Image (tube, rainbow, N blue to C red; front, side, top):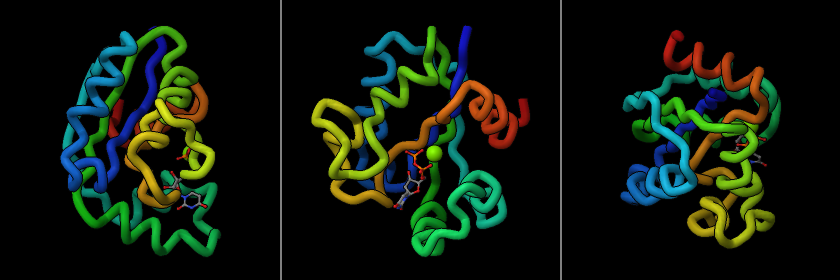
Length: 133
Ligand code: UDP
Ligand code: MG
């Protein structure tokens, strides 16, 4: 069974919509295989977001991602990496279609509620990074 790394970002928990987002994941037929609350620090974020660490918005992203706990999850299902990316919606708020998590809940690009791995290979790297397995 394929698995992916999903993370509910601090705004999802602050706004109290974590349950609604998890319901959408479960309703799609995916299984929450593991979950834990984490307070992230700058070091793990520099690793996790290495592909954008040189962008001008990176300091703002670190401030946001360290502003409160995240809910780290391993989600399982058939083709779940691609399926979760579709369920999440596009990164940019203005491109995230209604009906997607970001399209329905996000009104800016930084605070976009949820992270999901972008490839099967990265899913395994990220699961190892956050769960050590
Ligand atoms: N991000 C941002 N501004 C941008 C692009 C991205 O603040 O112009 C943030 C946003 O929270 C996004 C994260 O950086 O989810 C990681 O960016 P990536 O391109 O990997 O998008 P994702 O895979 O999360 O859709
Ligand atoms: Mg990404």
